[in-house]
Length: 253
Ligand SMILES: [Ca+2]
Ligand SMILES: [Ca+2]
Ligand SMILES: [Ca+2]
Image 1 (tube, rainbow, N blue to C red):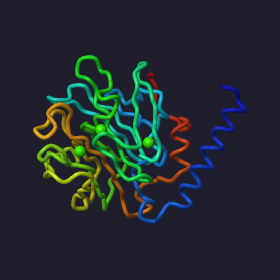
Image 2 (image 1 turned 120 degrees about the vertical axis):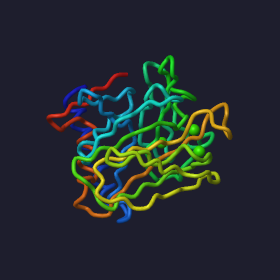
Image 3 (image 1 turned 30 degrees about the vertical axis):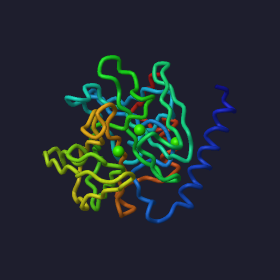
Image 4 (image 1 turned 135 degrees about the horizontal axis):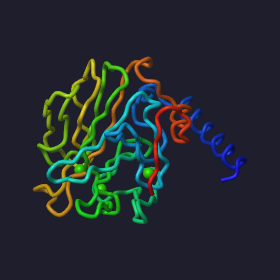
C-alpha cells in the first residue's frame, strides 16, 4: 500500500470514528463493543493476539480489555469473535473460505444500527467456519486491565435454555445460565461490580430445538462511567491499524 493511500485511509477512518463518537447517544457512549465492524484480535496463551480472517483486525487492548476464546465438548475449536451490525452485509475470508454476515441472518438478526459481539463457530475437524460463518456460538473470557463497576451484559436471541449465560466472574465459576426465550429476545443480567474478568457462553451447537445447527447468540457489554474504560472512536480506529506499541496483533488469513 502506498503511503498516501494509507494516510488517506487512516484519515477517513479517524473521521468516521470521530463522528461516531460525537453523535453516539449517551446510553451507548460506554459500550465495550467497538464501533467498527471487524474481527476481535483474540488473546493467545503466549500473550500475543491473533485475527484469523481478512476482516479489519480490532485491537481491544486500546479499550482496556482482552478477549480469550475457549473450547468445550461441543465446540472443540475455539470460535472467532467479530463485531457486527446488520445494517451492512460483510464478506470476509478465513483461509480462503467465506465468512458472510447477511443483513437478514437465517436465525439471529439484531436490529440494524446496533453493534454486537458476534461469534463464529468453527468446524471441530477442519477449523472451517460453519454455516459460512453464521453459526453464532462460542465461549469467551473478557479480561479487563482494571476492575470495572456497573458492568451490564445483554444477550441477544437466547432461544434454547441452559447453555448461554455467565460461566465465571473473576475466574470463579458461577454458571448463571439463561432460560429459553422468543425470537429476537434480549436478556440482561443483573449489574456486575468489581469485575476483572468475565466468561460467557454464547449459544450452543446442535440443541434440542435446533438439532441440525444450533442456537446462535450475540453479546453486548457496557459500563456506565466514562472513566472506567477508555473507549471512543479514535482509539478504536487506532486499534484497527495496530498503532499501539507493546502488544502486537498478528493477522492470519
Ligand atoms: Ca454487518
Ligand atoms: Ca446465524
Ligand atoms: Ca438464537
